[in-house]
Image (spheres, rainbow, N blue to C red):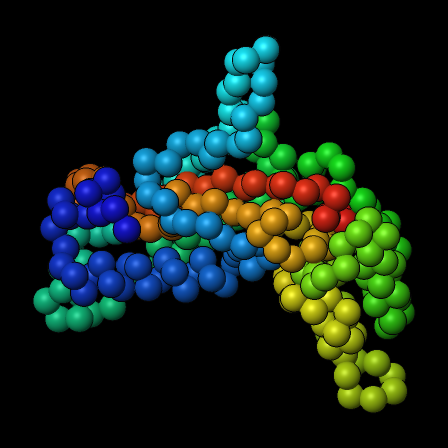
Length: 262
């Protein structure tokens, strides 16, 4: 963590307070993030990483240059009362951590939005060209979801991707998998986890559908510059202003390893 760029040394709070702010931020982010659970992570490389270079391309005879994926900064601010912080540092009286929670949730949602939908000219898992797709019908009947996921896995097999797969689903779909089969004690989620061996995850940022992809850095990776951290802006009246910040870039090397669940 590059505290020199986060202004943490300028904040009039102690190590125990920073530890608590970091803990609230980390636990909140873990409860929300889905993209990181699907994709291999590279880094963190530091706050100064601005672009992710790709392979060199020949512009004209004997002249080469690298294209790149921009590293996007995500930031969400919050403020805490000076008296509340002073009471915690003096007497360990708990203060309202909801502002930290809200900022961390906001950053987590923006991160997953970038991973699944993309941003600017950089596509996400659901928007990159070259993927296959599987149309989903209603999962009213237990067993329908498993049948359609098998069809999606088969499409990746047909494209040459025979290894382990992982999957993210919108909460409305994921929750349906918690129903038990009429015969036996197993849920449909238990069944699907035997088909999608590298994990099935709930993605709060998705409102519908999902994505199935072949696991492995060679297909897709998430490059982290500054990992999610709490920084300090300065005083503002009776409050101290902080922020949650991170920077990242999604690199999709083989779009054919992705099957979009529509």
